[in-house]
Image (cartoon, rainbow, N blue to C red):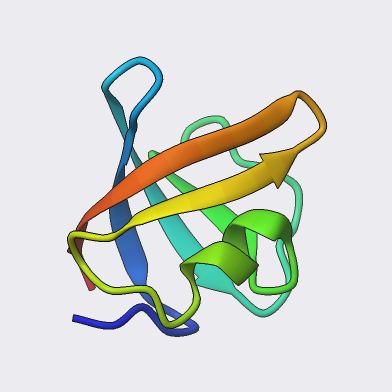
Length: 77
C-alpha cells in the first residue's frame, strides 16, 4: 500500500472529483494522447509527492498554478 517507482496509481483530484491514472517513471517522455495513464517523473513535484505515500492519503503538489491536492485511491499495478 506504499507508492514506489514503477507503480501506477489512481488519484482523485479533490478540486473537481475527477480521477486519473499516473505511472511513476524514472524519466518521463513526451505525453501520448492515446494513453490513459499519465507518466510522471519521480523527480517532478507530483512524483516527489507520491513517492512513499500510502493508499488513502491526500498529497499536496506545488504546481505553477498553485497547490493541488490528490487523494490516493489505489495502486493499480
